[in-house]
Amino acid sequence: MKKILAPEITKIVADLCIQANTVLRTDVLDALKTALRKEKNKRSYGILEKIIQNARIAKKEKLAICQDTGMACVFLQVGQEIKIAGDLKKAINKGIEIGYRKGFLRDSIIKNPLLRGKPAYQPAIIHIDIVKGDKLKITVLPKGFGCENKTQLKMFMPTAGIEKIKNFIIEVIKKAGADACPPFVVGVGIGGTADCACLLAKKALLRKLTTNDQRPTTNNQRPTTSLEQGLLRDINKLNIGPMGLGGKTTALAVNIETYPTHIAGLPVCVTISCHALRSASKTL
Image (tube, rainbow, N blue to C red; front, side, top):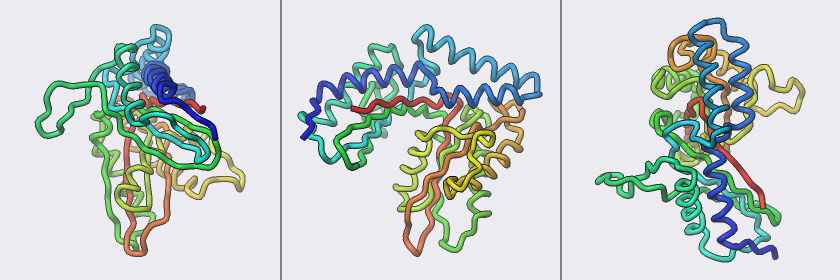
């Protein structure tokens, strides 16, 4: 059985915190560049230019892409044939602490949500999936709260049609407006229980972005592809645009994840990422 030591996990988590916060994902950067080529509004074009320039400087200078370095969400895919030697939770939180300090990233986490108090770097939000094999995949997603605050969950009746779900998703984007720093990446979770739908929406943000221009046209499409495409078109007609000042691109992509649900319900969660959708992964 493959053994992975806790200190190794700590080091990797620390490195991923810095990478995620300073190096914008290639797929997100490509989507921003595509949006720039399409934009006709002079002011919106200038904003997209600055967003792309900001990402380039952040990578070169090893600086945070955004001052809100988020709450660290850590996703683990744990192979059932591995053994983790040591305290996994402690190893992850130690890695967050080290990475955020080393990378000069903002401490934004308060220990008591009601009493508030002095901020710290951790604890992280940790999600674990057990999978086949002897690999451990670690993904760090720093989630800023300007966009996190716009998350919405709705428990639909099971008879609700696709149009009702689409209208709900679009209404969430309208309400978010400029406050969540568009252009957005929209993550949608459909199915499971309420908590499952919210987790699915977060996981949707980890998926590689595929814009309407990039989506495959073969029979290998995901079942939700046409819904994602339609939503992206409709959202981009809202004219919210980059930083809420109008333009063609309100969203870079819409990613939907689904899970089986109960006959009596239909949970739908919408979570938004700002243009700085940050995550980094490593597999051991």
